[in-house]
Image (cartoon, rainbow, N blue to C red; front, side, top):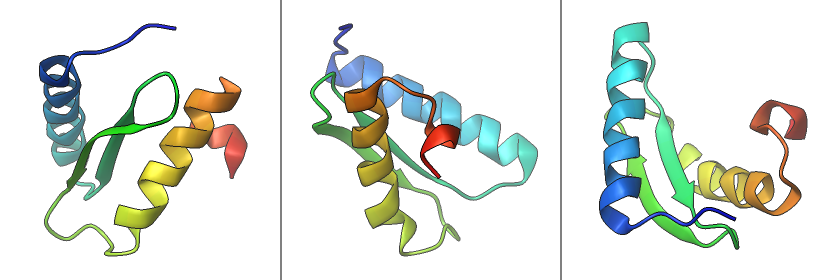
Length: 73
């Protein structure tokens, strides 16, 4: 499993939020380590409040079962 430093996880979050902005989306970004433990949580202005609970749970599931997030819906 690849591990990320906090700086790397934060940089990924910045890139994801920039991409979401380009698409006109408002998202919550959750980045977890290989064990599914939360490293970074960023909720963009206008992102649904409940997404702050859903995003970490979904990210943990993705890390633990090693599947794309779209497969978990």
